[in-house]
Amino acid sequence: SNESRARFAGPPQHRPAPPAPPAAPAAGPRGCAFRGMSLYKFKEIQTIPPAKQLIDIVLSKTNRKTPTIVHPGFKITRIRSFYMRKVKFCQTTYGEKFGKLLEDFPKIDDIHPFYADLCNVLYDRDHYKLALGQVNATKKIIDSIAKDYTKMMKLADSLYKCKMLKRAALGRMCTAVKKLAGSLSYLEEVR
Image (spheres, rainbow, N blue to C red):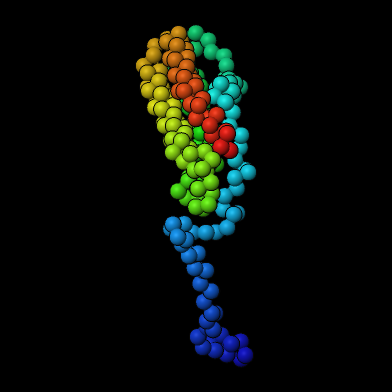
């Protein structure tokens, strides 16, 4: 019958291979690949609040988004987790803020030579790199503060000790951010 002939008509017809992806753009004189101005959207960099304002934002967010009432009658494990949650939340909030900031600002070595030279003339390339480096270092310092204090909280045996450790942890994080004031105001000016 016609159906059996169609089934055994021979090997299946091969479709042509999909076209190869376009080749990468040629590297420019300084090794940069020029892809046009759409690569960096400088106008989309968000505003950077001053250090004190950033601290207020993070601490109020920590207070709003985490539980606020703890009683001395609770089990010590519940008290510890209550305060650890606050410290970790504060750490992640600072981490997100600094991560976004570092992501928004382009690396001078990766942008078009024209923009790199312009940035160097207007804002000094070394100062720019130093400011971003300080933000990154502060992010790591905050992570280590949170790690150290959560370790200490696991050994705390009273509500008062947990509360003092939480207070010290948030205080040290805020002090680290206060030291960034110059870098943050500089990056806001660059933006």
